[in-house]
Length: 592
Image (cartoon, rainbow, N blue to C red; front, side, top):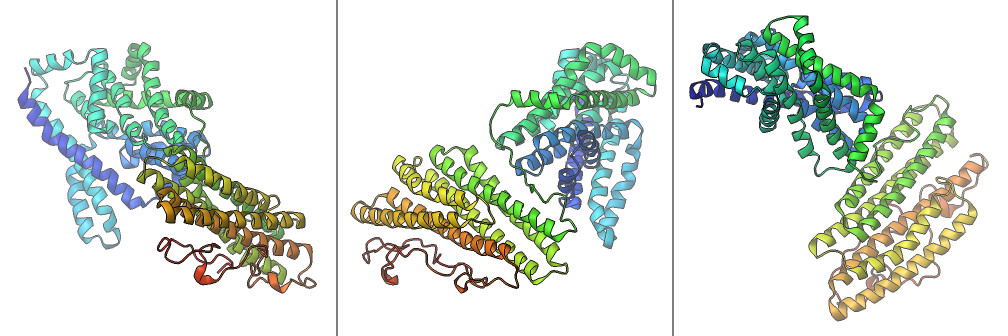
């Protein structure tokens, strides 16, 4: 028989508790305004530090789910590596024990004080108004637990209730109840808080409570697993690590439940304090074991969630330690980072072409990740150059700063065109029934030349050899001729058949042409930069056609006929009215 009187006594307090803890977590994160994310990203180089940080953050937000979801989000964004996330995930289980300790030590009575204090601070606090809501909701958490405790008090000696609790405390069933209840409310803090309150009122003993706490630990992972379902491979691994860690901890302790309960009892305290201590000690033991073998743990997770997706992290390769006092050494580091940015841009174009061939969501996510890294590197390079520009520089050094800024900007714009290519392929794939095989084949034939140009540019980037310049000029002409020929073919086909694939290919050609123009701009900047590095500024005479003011002036495409503007669409002779207005990307002959 269902004890309805007990159910209706507990449910209002439980609803308030769940509402309070959810809003308290949200308000704390709002007050932090992304600070938690930055802290987690910066201070997790060592697993032990990551675990301590995870424990502190979880204790503050009163939600291990919030901490782990933030963590896998940072892994998905490339701010954290998968291995860095393991320490935070392990520590979050320790932090979530704070709620149980507050209840066990009768801190719930403070809820009646914090609610009005939070309300008044929120209205009259002025400078501290932002603390009003967190205080109010934390008070609501404590007040609701006190409400549940008061509601349970009349039932502590009821034989029917005691018998019902004992019936559901059998080991497998108790773990299942803890798991299901935590999954339902999506908060292990709610489960553990309720279990401690039940123990406080004499309705649960320590041996009965421990299995429910173990089930709650496993249940706390479901939110993270669901959240990671549509994220990248490394985020899914982080979520799986959370599940494997919690499940593994439970499996490790199960054979030792009796001696574990005896250990907790020996420490002493009230029944509620012993339950809270059992929760804390179990999570401390599990954390210590997994931290000792964290390398093997990471390997286990990688085998459990297989995949070959590279991990793209939002980090520089050469600027993580800042700019040294030696300005020339600083320039060398920035040059090396520019080469890294070039490599990322090449990877971005290749990822777009891979997505064209496969139409897989994971491949498009790689395009998005590389686009973010491309912009991030440009920002970090400019930041480093601003730091150098604030020093006392010679004319030659000041000129070098300008060159490097321009090259960084142009590399980022080239990468944006690679991202445009990927985004266009995605739209094409979604609007139709996949990407036509003919479009894939024709795009690959033209892209192959562009890829060779980007590779050639990067051999010594940001410098360049004269022999490489000659090769790039020749391939530039080759690509422009190929683009013009393909334009003519596609415009004729479009006029004759109105084929959708043809109109798609015109857009692809436009993006590739714009990308090649950027490669040409970068090649000319590299020519200038190489001249500037070879000779002292005082004796260097830079050819006016390669002036810094207009570093990409001039026309290397002497072999390509120049057509009247009114009959020119990206270098193609077009019969007026043949296909209406086409999307143009403007004049790419010069950098603005």
